Length: 386
Image 1: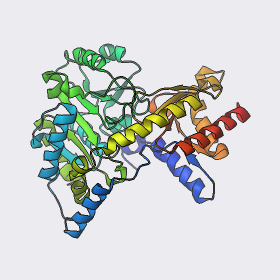
Image 2 (image 1 turned 120 degrees about the vertical axis):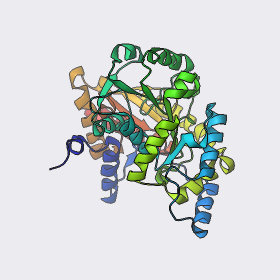
Image 3 (image 1 turned 30 degrees about the horizontal axis):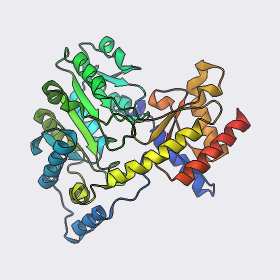
Image 4 (image 1 turned 90 degrees about the horizontal axis):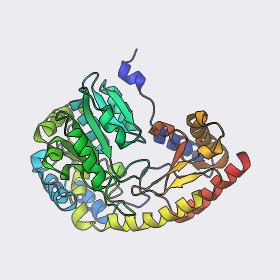
């Protein structure tokens, strides 16, 4: 009845958990959620004010498919200052979120049977996007595996630093090692997902892969968004920067999918860096405090091993200590999350959909009070049931 691509897809694990949590809240349950992949801060006032002005001025019609020229100018300046990357406006495409940028890039680059290299744990949407393009996801567990997994069929390598779900940041040495390995494959493209680049808590700051060398620059699409940086997840405003020929192909595809990104969101994004440029740092400092608290409390739970993230706003937590059977790790993390939500009143995300069976992901983009209460509830649930 439906296409093979359609029937191969499954609902996003994060969205499914969030939907069930909302159902329980609507039914009168008190649910504490660590599931959301979005900051709990409000969008800064100058950004909202710019959107209101756009409405009042009637800026509600179609714009150029790849975005308004003035926003492209702002983004090229941001990429130069923050990411040490030089792009012309013709090398930038603006879309309805970074997810659309990623999807368009994969659809433009991947043919049937082409291989896309993805390191686990990974954002849940990557493999499904590859499925739609009729490509093949090649999952690696460690960057040391990369050289062994590359073949003539390899078309795309996805890099996500800081990583969702682990918070891992690949330092310069690690990125240079990757760049050296792929240099032998001149037809391999790199999609560098940098949506969490404003959130880092330890040693290494995030580095744009395309900034490493001319070779890296010429084969890389740098992907980012306003969603996390300015707490604008619902505004749907993302962007990509890369070689003109790829941007052109993506523009043609976007013409047939959505046309232009939201006109009002574009006007709002126009003032984000100039009028709310200190906002990401405010969030980063607060998230750093929360990060220390949640990791400390999680590691006080028997059977838990929470890993201190380098960046993003998630804690990747090993719960394999709750089971004596390592082979059941995948089943155990999903069952654990289902029971924790239904019986314990706490929403967390299972690791299996991220390619990490036996782990769970918790977002600390919530208040310290919620963190304290929620982790205490998880501890009680574990003590009662395991």
